[in-house]
Image (cartoon, rainbow, N blue to C red; front, side, top):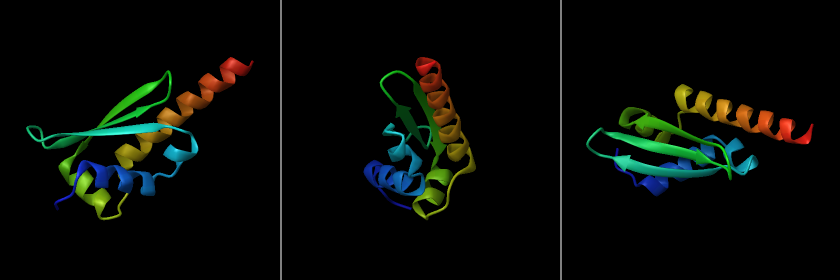
Length: 89
């Protein structure tokens, strides 16, 4: 499957709307030597990096969610929520 990093980013945002809902920035880079994509999730303070293999990226472009990426996003959002709760109390 042939697509750009930008197209993959928009597909990830489509499949995982919580990224936008929580105000998370997402940056993607392609590593052709390792045949994978680096997905970096950031806010002003916390940051998380996930590596998405070409097969997983292809599945994502086909509209299929990645269990690994989904769990990583979920953990990142949990960390954000705990940080925000700690700051309030």
